Image 1 (cartoon, helix red, strand yellow):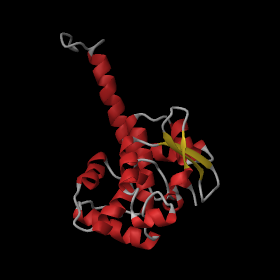
Image 2 (cartoon, rainbow, N blue to C red; image 1 turned 120 degrees about the vertical axis):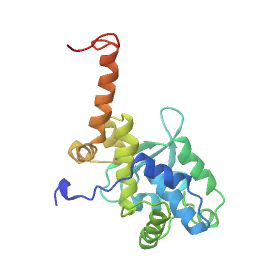
Image 3 (cartoon, helix red, strand yellow; image 1 turned 135 degrees about the vertical axis):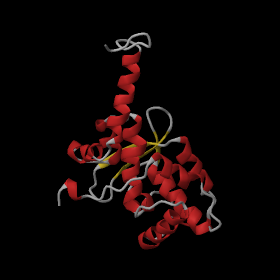
Length: 201
């Protein structure tokens, strides 16, 4: 299987925001949403977030909490600083019975139940995409990281890729980067060559 064969479903900024802001009457959907958003903001795969324990968080060079582990799938190291939103999710489950009993960071359901409930969440949020455990990781790589200027070589370390070619795959599936780059170019040109008082012809 080549990189081009890899499932590259990811959420747009608007779709991600709709899941974050949605209020669910069901606790099970709220829990799954929180785990999903945590993965959208860290790039963790299902197996890595499911096994993550509280005592496995480390203090990084910046004095903030990081996830500094090896991927379960490949044993490749990955390092991800935790954003404030992910810290808020962790705090929410500090006293959760399952987390207290197991020492796990989050209350993660089985992979099959997790994917089933993600389908419910997608429907309730009006998202016409097949949400799976992989979608959050792809969303982190594209909409969260690359779209906001994280360099490929940095993203490679956060995703735990052994090769930059794996990471480059995500850049290929993000055409909006071209649009944003042109918008930024137009803004720069309008301040230099094409000022408001200058016209072509």
